[in-house]
Structure formats: structure tokens, C-alpha cells
Length: 283
Image 1 (spheres, rainbow, N blue to C red):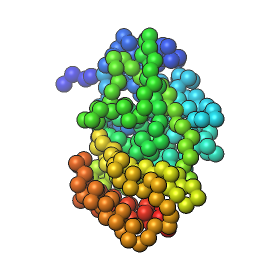
Image 2 (image 1 turned 90 degrees about the vertical axis):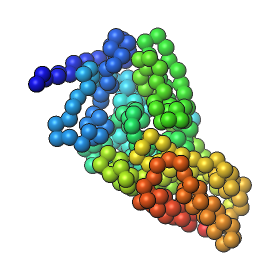
Image 3 (image 1 turned 90 degrees about the horizontal axis):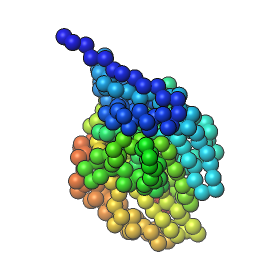
């Protein structure tokens, strides 16, 4: 049997990376490799034919803060983001990052790699979707910024143009004073149980000014319901028992009729999450 070897490129700058990608459009971007290796479930994983190893590129590891947002290089590891941004990271995003285990994986896994898995929406995605995160996409000769909800089409496929690479993630600072996050299961090894659930809310003087909720399974989709979110926006707290039960039932009905593929366990766990969130959110 003929052996197949991988060709590995080691660019030391962003410009060099873009040039190599332009000349080798089929090459796979590789940093920690946790996603590419984890999804194969093999003792001896199969490597892509062409690999671009980006660990030497300093530009992709930079993290900077402004008054309005936190900007993170796509090659920054999860643990480095947690360390550098420990006082400014939104709570829900910090919670979701800390649930990536063990710590050795967080040392290798990058935010860019987390977002660019073609067959999975991993746990951080539901949080970043609600936060209106922006993404910088670069290719040789061009740069564009897009909202994270446009990074995937309705079929869950990544929307990168020819030879584009995700280079920076911009996380805006919101006015959220309630950030709730839960997840269960490993999306690589336990697809029937992997689920993530996030709620962000802005409550001022007992009035819900903003409310957002997202649920993601281990597949290609993360969903929101603008209709459900609007039920809570403008409500004055505390809600009556009748109002709380009516809202909970609406959430449960929505979950039962979701068109994304959910296992019975995922659907049941999602309903439990809804009641937990409403209990936490609506005294």
C-alpha cells in the first residue's frame, strides 16, 4: 500500500501565510490541531495532504482591548485568552472557555480553530452569536469584516471566499448584567448528548431591556428565536406566576418543534435548561 505524506508549511508572518494559502488553496490551516485530531476518533489520525502550521505567526496571537471591544487573534490559545482577558472577558464567554477541558487542550486550542470546524458548531459559538461578534477575513490582496451570523450559510457551511483565512475576532462589550451559560457532552465523542445553551439579558430598574437566547447541538446549527426573545423584552420584573408559566410553556413548545436535529436527550436537557434560566432570570 502506498504511503501518503503531508507537506507542512511553516510561515513566520501573516503576509507569508496569505501567499502560501494563495498558492495552495487546498492547504489546511493548523495551529493546535485539537479539532482536526479530535473529530477523527482514530488511534492513528489521517492528516491532510497540505498543512500550513501557523504557530510561529505573532500577528495571529495578539490580543488588544479598546473602550468598545476586545480584539483577539485567531491563533491565540483559549488559556492565553482567559489569562490576558480575565478582567474584561464577558462572563458567559469565560464560562464557556473554562468548560473546554482538560487545561492541556485549552493550551493548544485556538479561537480561530474553534470557529472554523466545518462539521461542528462548538460550544463557544452560541455565546459569540448572541454577542454580535465580528470576524476579520483576509486573503492575498483583500480584507473584509463580517458579523459572525454570516460566517455560515443556512446549511451550516463556512462562507470563506477563495483562499480566505480567519485572522481576528472582535468581541464587543455589551451591557449585559445577566449572562447564563450551560453545556453538556463532548461534541467530538458524544454527539447525541452534546448541547450548549446561552442567555444574555440587560435588566435595568426591574425592566428587561434586552434578552437573547441561543441553543446549539453538536452539528452545524445554532438557533435563536426572535419571537421568543421579544416576549420578554420590555417586561417588568418580577413577573407573575401566570406570566412565568406562560413564557416557560412557549419556550418548551419552541424547543419541541425545532427543525434542527436533536436527540431525545438533547431536547430534554434543553427544556431543563430553559426552566433553570427562567428561574435564574425571573425572580
